[in-house]
Length: 111
Length: 112
Image (cartoon, rainbow over all chains, first blue to last red; front, side, top):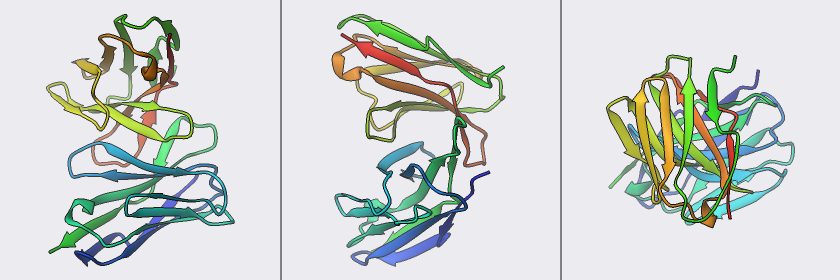
């Protein structure tokens, strides 16, 4: 089965600092999703990457899928308290109907 | 039998009509979700429910309502369908304490 491992598991950054979260898959990724989850809430879709080398940005968040399509990175520029939450990468395991998520990265942004 | 079922699988309706999409699960999970998926996009959360008495709006709840009739059933309604609600709708369940969501097969809705 496909496994997604994220690093770091948790991160505390000062407001205004940049940060990067990584997602590594045990298998080739055919579609990689980044989600944010606020405490106690459902998932908020951030972006989807499909092609090797693809890079997408939304506001101050940029995600990239590496050429070999087994790793993705999420980069936040000039972090703000509103960026706090749990960031999850997700992928469908082949034709299965189950969306598998990474282990999650808990982000705290301090003032 | 599938653990998460959705009915109907396909539906074509006209603008202004009321429509209900149903989701049933046999996994015994407390948490249920409704998402929509549009071409080129990932799943966007419409509503979610952590138990029968707990209903919460997601990021795109406008124009939708839900009902959690029982632990196993979670329905999504479009009170007055509009064309930009044409999409693929997924129901999902999640066991509390895990990060895995199990999805139904989806309902393809077309609003003309």
